[in-house]
Amino acid sequence: MLKLLFVFVGVFCILVWPWVYLLRYRIAETQALKQYAMLFGPALVLLAGYFFYTEPPAEIRSQACGVVQGYQTYMTAGNSHQRKPFERIEILMDDAKYLRHLRIDGGLLKKGAGGRACFEFYDRKLNPHMQDSIVIKWRE
Image (cartoon, rainbow, N blue to C red; front, top):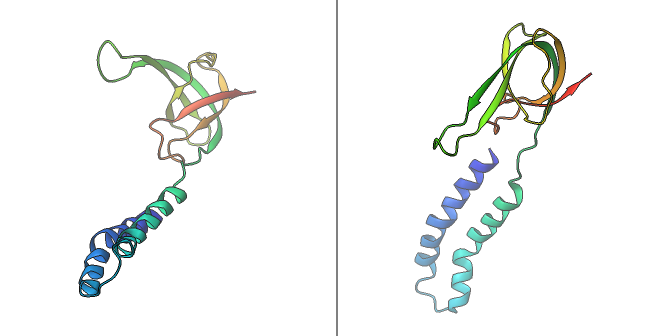
């Protein structure tokens, strides 16, 4: 909502405000520096406010347990010479009773298929800026 407000006020400052200013003060004889400051000042203040208030989204960690069903290896999309493999783990979650496919970090040790595992992960549902849900570490 805040971004939409910044965009709306930014369009107003860039498109509408200069025309109103030029039509109102076109006849008046004033200094050129003052005119340009009034013309682009609000747009610069708005741009500075936008960059000040937009922060990178916080990553929310989740904890869950489930039964490991297996692992699958995939290749990233793109040029065949630059494709890299990554692994996903299939886990039957305790609370939901459905399979989740989570990307697993390359540095984590694998848990045996059929074994119960508890883990911390970045959930894609809670972190909409992430492309996949990612297992961070195993909990004991």
